[in-house]
Length: 199
Image 1 (cartoon, rainbow, N blue to C red):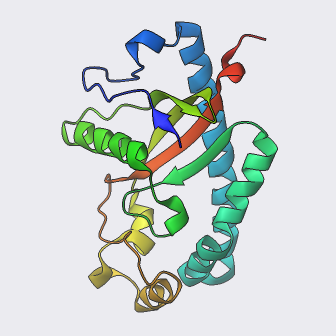
Image 2 (cartoon, one colour):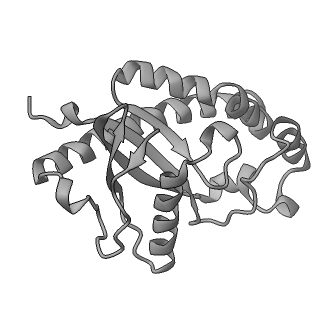
């Protein structure tokens, strides 16, 4: 079982690492670079396919895409990344596959508190152990854009057909009632320590 080594330290805005096992500046820079590249790869894959689903059948079709293909596309991206792994997690998840673990939840709450203060950092870096090996976890916050409200907004203002499909596909949906700018969740990128070595 993975045990997070890092406690959230609200004094640092951009990244925090455990003091006794802290990353060098070069390692931090590489973690940010690798993390952002993985996030962008997943975002591009999901947005491209979501766009095609929208053109094909509007938001109801987009929900079908999210329910049936988003996780498969995430797995495809991870196969292409080989050793680095990326996913989305949220405390208000729609798909149970996006449920956060205990440490993810602490990071989400950290971002949410910083957002309330008007100081949302662009990322958060943590160190952890997985399978007895040190890994670095890069988190990037996901914000709600106005476009997202078509499927994640106030149910009273949403298209009834969209709500019908959502209830059919996600009977335990927790991802409604957002407003623009809210924290939707995070991208989580797990990076093996050896990937931070200068090559």
